[in-house]
Image (cartoon, rainbow, N blue to C red; front, top):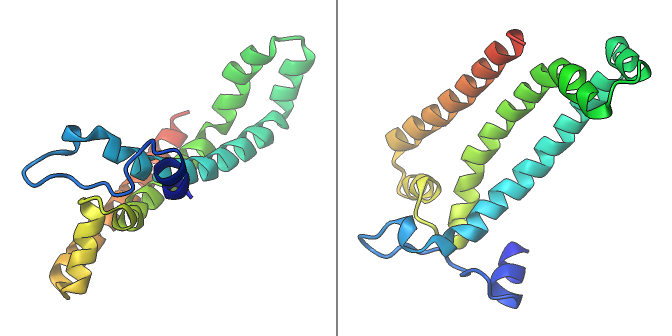
Length: 158
């Protein structure tokens, strides 16, 4: 849909995100509009739902309700009570979007023709480069594990 609307109907971005040989993405920043939006919109919408659920759960806690009932300003209650109570869940939800962003690049880059890690993975799969595919899969898994471990550490210290 992004391609149809932004590239087709509105002509705001190129339909194909090619980087000239020897060039960099900075040479044509407009080529990054559709790939960036495709990853950010879907991942952001999913993250927003998880964060909203964490905040709703935190607002039901007794100390947060007591702060509301004591007449504190709603933004103060949010900053001082609700967000700290929801911080662990928010950290976990944020970590859960990392695998989507990493794996989502594979699909998005192939759709728009952007030469990045996604097209590299696809190239390795097509040419049956099993060692390279296994290595990149391990790197993706390590990024996922590291993001959840970091979220656990951050969530415990709040």
